[in-house]
Length: 254
Image 1 (tube, rainbow, N blue to C red):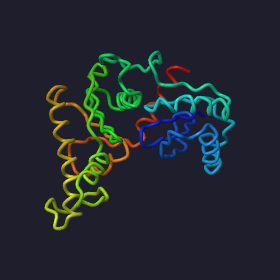
Image 2: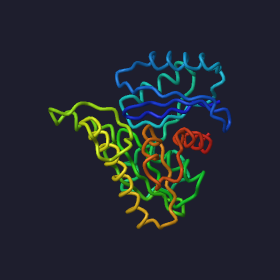
Image 3: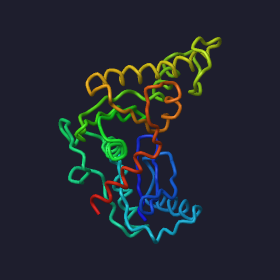
Image 4: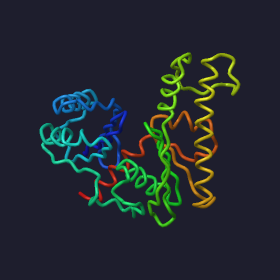
């Protein structure tokens, strides 16, 4: 069994694979101040609740976009699992040719998503990851990572509206039945949801003009299901895409 870890700016996702089967996974808040013991004890407790024997973990792979946590997670893997973790970083085989300038500037999560999407659907592809930022990644028919788009996430947009407008409240982000809101809260929810759907559709349409009309669109990330419900341009919803990509990359390098 292997432990796969995706460390994002807002959430950290852990998963355990037995071969190609995802046994269980957990989404936690990313805490930059967390200690080795906090991560280690929490991981072991989660395994215990899921009836997973932590002694049977034979490998650990981590994709991180929060560098200060890297040494903490490395030590956690050594101390609690007695394993040196593999980090997705330059030098690790991914099977994805990166056409970015410079290649090392691409976030590990974007590469991992691309690997999994390409394995499952083949190119050309647009992979949309709805996280703290929303990223749109372009994969060519030949399996090359071409680059993409980085936009503020819908959560950031909501917080900015609340913080900068004195009379506007903080609201839950959710779809509304009608675009025209009949209250302040409804108007804000409509603007956030349909405004963001419009952003997503606009970028996808423009990327498809460059990649070709046969390009498939794969969505993942915390807000993917909600946004996908508001547009017909997303072909596949893959909530566990990055975990699958980590498994594939681990097997390539094991």
